[in-house]
Amino acid sequence: MDDIRAIYEDAVLNTSATFEETLPDRAEICRRRDAVLAAQLPYLVGVRDGMIVGYCYASPFRPRSAYRYSVECSVYVHPDHRQKGIGRAMVAVLVDRCAAQGYRQMLAVIGDRNNAGSIRLHEGAGFREVGRLPGVGYKFSRWVDVVVMQRELGRGSGTPPD
Image: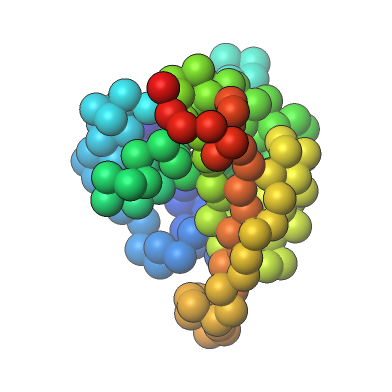
């Protein structure tokens, strides 16, 4: 979890990919992972040369019951290992696992319309932009948009759930 926290630290302190401005402590990072696992959702790590270089997980999209077939994708890659296929590989596995569990929609809530790497990664994984929330965050002394991307899983919304 120290490696996971270090990867997230870069995102918090140097990017607007997350709107968090203070790095959570190790216990909080562990609590978040435990919540994903308790919800029986995937939490994946990317490993290269024996080193954790990224992580990706699904979480419930919203807490109300009608959202129970929708999940949110989060992915973070160590800055030295970006654009090397690690994020794309993790998201592909995440999509497959969530579809196998019966989820029908996956959303990515991407901090910053200028986050071209994350937008490209999600487009490559079959997501499409479905909306923008202009200026909903304020980080690094500027207003930051959110880009919402979505992809169907399994049979999507074409049929009722099993």
